[in-house]
Image 1: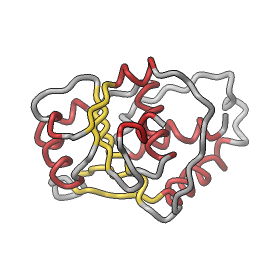
Image 2: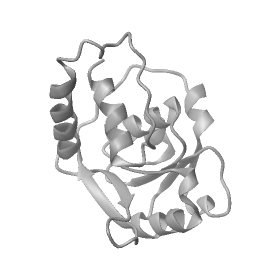
Image 3: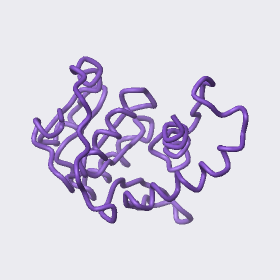
Length: 169
């Protein structure tokens, strides 16, 4: 709801420059919920990748721990610690097409040059459901066990490491 009030709309790209924190995950889930497109980037990726991501995705909003000259190009700026201080309201689930873009991740692949790879809401859901099948028989996976995510959520592996346990409760 905060994103909508700030002016973010469905299909808008939202750059999230942050390390793995609970607020980062909240931001990503909020972006998905309104049908906007999440563009997570690790702050350790360096300015070249961040510049490239901005040029390719043209984000209308940026969520970050702090804003430097590079991130100031976004029209809408939301500090990550703002998310923590927001009043919690009842969750409203917004309608969006499951075939629309949900996330854009950057990978160097085999060439060493970054490529923007998008995934739809349906694709992400299928990934998570596939991985859940492996977890559901594991007696060590439950809501009472901590889950450590070592990879950045700006990487598909780290992202799925977060989303799969969340989907299991």
